[in-house]
Image 1 (cartoon, rainbow, N blue to C red):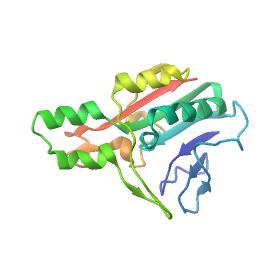
Image 2: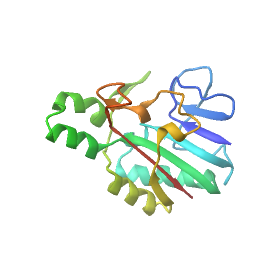
Image 3: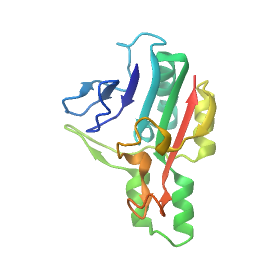
Length: 179
């Protein structure tokens, strides 16, 4: 079993369970916080792109423990979050202005009955610490091009300049780890 959490409109196909609060045909309309409908150690891979930062650091630990519960002993958690270090470097080097950083860093998503914003930012050191605190290991960056979902353009493939995947700077921190 593979879970795509916070998938929105992106449908990776029938090999994936898509969980989101959105209203798309392929979605299991549920909360990514409570996977109680999934038994312990049933999932091979959890993937979430630019959704994890909507939880503050304390909430993140609760979320990670729940995701770890459903992962198999050798299961993989793959996360993509905005890369604070990458964007700060671009800003300090005069490549981007603050206005270009606001969306990726602070986010804003309007839902049916509310609007939510990013609650935190990560660099590799801080996301590693959060994952280690939750008991994950083998934490490393991954190349989105080498994943089974590479053909689906999502925020794990966010570059500045926009869509310049050959010459631009990746502004997504793409990290995977194992249970």
